[in-house]
Length: 133
Image (cartoon, rainbow, N blue to C red; front, side, top):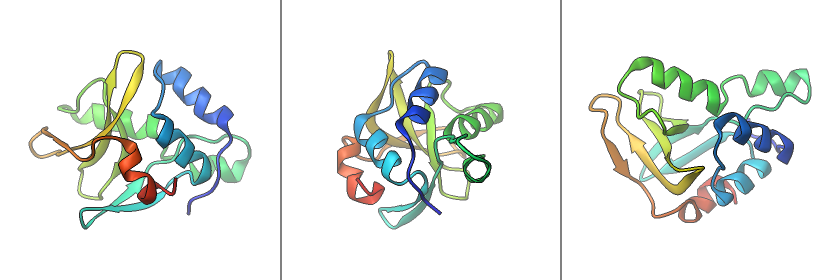
C-alpha cells in the first residue's frame, strides 16, 4: 500500500546515503511512497523510503531502500555504489547508479543471475507516470 511521505524522511535517507536522489523520484515518492509499477510488461515492487513518524509507518517502510540495498550487497555481485529502488520478486532489482554525490536519473535493471546492468529509461521523468509523478 502506497502512501505520502514527508520530505524530512527523504532528506534523512539522502544524508545516510551521502548522495542526493533524483528530483523526479523524490517527488514521486513523497506523493506515493512505495507501491508497484509495470515496466515493459514486468511488475516491480517499489521499495519505500523509511518513515519513522509513527509505528504504522515504521512497519510499512521496514523494507526501505537502504535495507534492501544492504541486503543486495550482502549477496555479492551487486554494484557497490548503486541503490536498489525496486524488485521484481525473482531477485532482479531496479537501481539508480551513483555519480559522485548524486544518483543519476537513469534507472537500470540489475540482473541477479549475471550481475549485469541493463539501461531502462533515459531518466526518471520517463517513468513519472509509472511512479505517480
